[in-house]
Image (cartoon, rainbow, N blue to C red; front, side, top):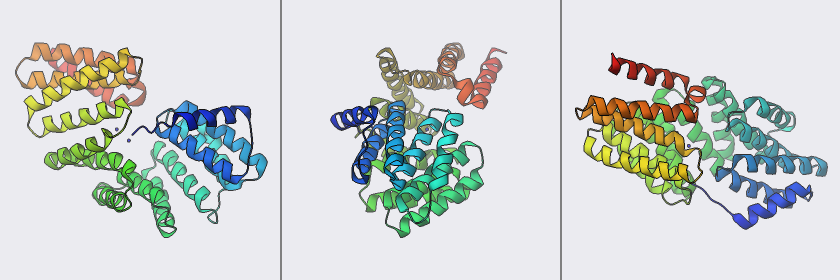
Length: 325
């Protein structure tokens, strides 16, 4: 629950070049990889996937092994992040066939994506081992942004008692290296770890820090999600009135984005309306709260919650039935 940097001219040029199938040496391929990464970080995953696939083809033809591995790995990740693991699997396998520790950039990129496939498959132990290897490998070679990525992932996949340590380690490394693009997801991850551990005051503080960095970006939806996170932590921290005000703003913002064509915003309409229902019930109006819960669940169903979080979907259905009974 992981800032949009949109480089329009560069991304457009890269897309034209990729679709035209132009090749180029390793230096040009590195530039195209960075441009594709910018598109990926902008959450334009399908467009980024097209760019990575074209880069992989050109790198293979040019014998640029490192760039080929990176592009294959990221083509795999662009599928995985949209829920299409089956289509991504052949691409990570292609990266694995050529990846070697003697190539720092290709190997580190491969490990980062391999670990995510292991995590997605539910094997947190193996994924954590992969990310530990990635962290040590990148730190030793001063590839600090990827070391931070590894720390961030260990804070997700690791044992509960070590997650705080790794989240804090990633934050410290990002602050020391002035890699501010990492501070929003790192603070966000730490905040939710605190919330899950019922350390709500610390969770609220961390999620407010995450919000500061999310609001430095251009993309509105991450800002909506950051505000939702703060509102939720406020509620759990006992500030019900403040949480209600924030959550109402989140709902209005998400609704506006959805009406403007952002399909992902529907999920946050549903989540924020659901939480408003719980708040209204806590304030004593069960009838109005139940209505909000029902509408929120309907929006979440339309957003596909049954596919990407069946357990939460069932739990919310049971909550409504409990209130009706």
